[in-house]
Image (cartoon, rainbow, N blue to C red; front, side):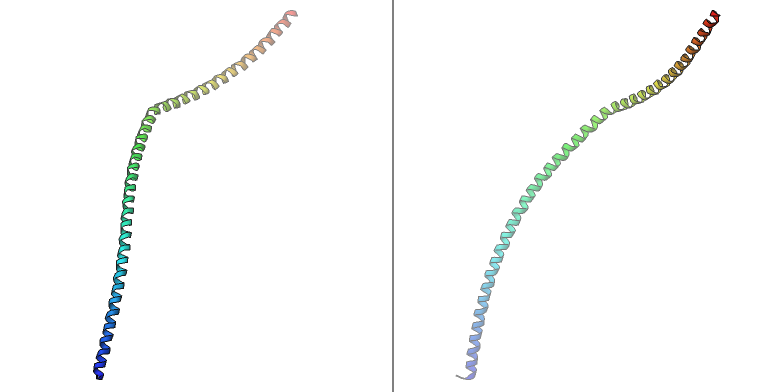
Length: 141
């Protein structure tokens, strides 16, 4: 065997070792890719289930919100109608308050006049008694 043949055998063995290592590496890579794909599929399935649950819950929540808004609108409409019915009552109460205020002012004026008249009457009574006393004194003399 010559040096060239020995070099060719060594090169062939190195090539065989390289092919074996590359095949082993590719098998490991294939195994890793399959595991990763399996995990990704599991994650996607769980994500899809979660999205379905969230969509279902969101639809239920939206329906309940619509019902709540409809009820709120009905209640607000009812309150508005009742306020419109009661509004004349408040106007009447306001008018009554004004009438009571006017009555109080008239009563104060009347009491003032009565007080003035009673002062005048008291003075007249005193003058009358004084005149009566003077008259009885003149009669005695």
